[in-house]
Structures are given as structure tokens and as C-alpha cells.
Image (cartoon, rainbow, N blue to C red; front, side, top):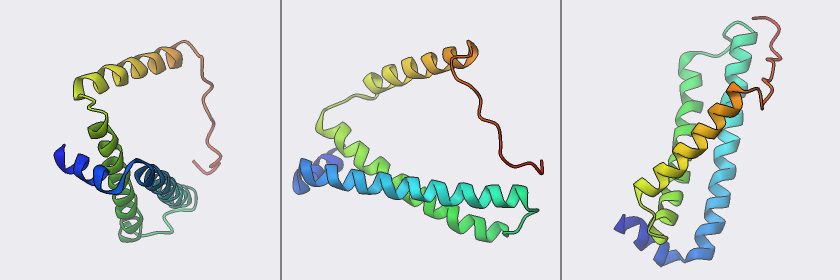
Length: 115
């Protein structure tokens, strides 16, 4: 964790907050692009090769890594333990699973009509 803390300390909180915002945006853009290609492949009979999809997937993984690095810098800055984070994440997962089970959320229908 020291490496993450050192980077956070070097650039400062405000700078890393801006960087996190930028990286989250780039990650969401990569997800949208990748999902659009998958959707097209499913709906229009494999218009992209595995290699073409892998290029977009690699970009998605890269952007995800950038976001995780920055999130880990914040974890280091605030001294958040894995156990503390896991407890909150488990609680949120439990709540979401309960809400799914009880019909709190409505399921989105796929807009792809070819499947």
C-alpha cells in the first residue's frame, strides 16, 4: 500500500480526485464501446472477429486497472482495511440480492430482437 500512498502524496488529493474522475470516464467509455461491439456481434451474426473484440477488451482491462490504481490510492490515504471494505461490500451485495429477490428492481428487456 505504501506505493499507492506515495503516489497520492506526491500528486496531492485534488490532483488525484481529478485524475480519478478522468479515469472513471475513460473506463465507462471503454465499457460502452466494448458492450456495443458485443451487442452488434450477438444481433448481427458475428460481424467482429475474436481478435477485434480482444483489442477492445484489452482497452477495457487497461482502463479498469487505472481506476483500481486510483481507488487503491484513496484506500491507502484513508487507511481503509480490506476487512472494513469487505464488510461494506458484503452488506451492499446482500441488500442488492434481497432487492432482486423481492422484485424491488425491474428487469430490463434486451433490445436485440434476433435472439
